[in-house]
Length: 228
Image (tube, rainbow, N blue to C red; front, top):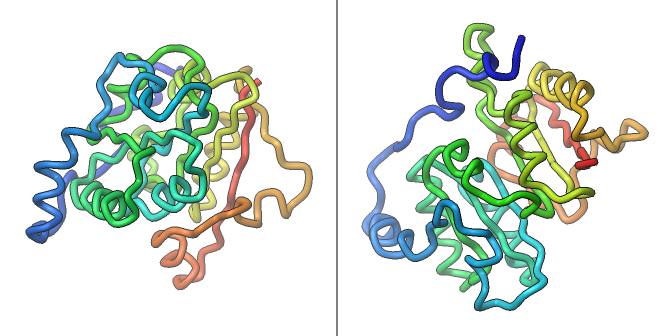
């Protein structure tokens, strides 16, 4: 299967769930515009008021934002860009940004595949893809976020030595990702022993999706890949 033919349709499902609470709606209307990434603008420019020489980490599909907010709080010397098209999830993150007064987060609330091609080469030091929609049915798998094409685009925007982290509780998605990593000329899988993919990442705060998976008896895997 060619990289060009591997994706068909959006990698995410619905854009909005239940009606937002009044405060969350206010955050989406009034806080989101000031934090939204400008396509084509170098990430460093988005954070220039915080100083130069800072790393920039990207999280694609941050869900409720708990991992992104925890990382931004723990690493206040790092710039974070979070992408999430689900409005309710974006509202939850904005509430955490307000609550914890996080000034090192910017966001993108549309399809990440529209944003990445506009960004400069080698602008990210780390990328997270955590519990993405698994699209488990065979006919749906072309909608999975991780594809040969996506890995090529991520390789372009990641610095040499930058780390790509992928977590999922769906075994066949883990296998799907590893198959594409192993045939990629741009990444290599860092793992040397089973604990390297069975144990969460250092400083891992967990996510609501992970907690649900464990409650339901599924075992998460935590992959780490390096941009060569």
